[in-house]
Image 1 (cartoon, rainbow, N blue to C red):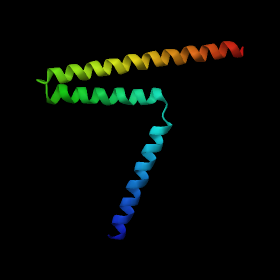
Image 2: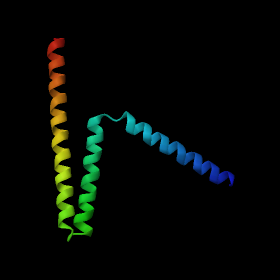
Image 3: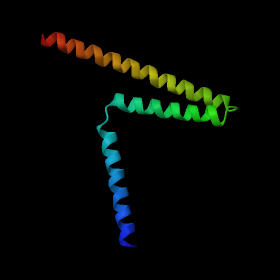
Length: 90
């Protein structure tokens, strides 16, 4: 293996490690947001590239809607908690 290939492998390993660390540092809400965006990307891909796959598109839409609802509920709970903490602190 050449020096260049070794360096490339090391860089790829470091990038992969950094990606894993970033994922671990994300809050549950951030992970839900990322999941929602990925679901919508797949849905858009299906709609544009495979419009005859109605069932798959429907399932993607339903999955996205469920994640979106959970995300909104989570944000509401967080907002209420923050308001309660502010009221207690006053």
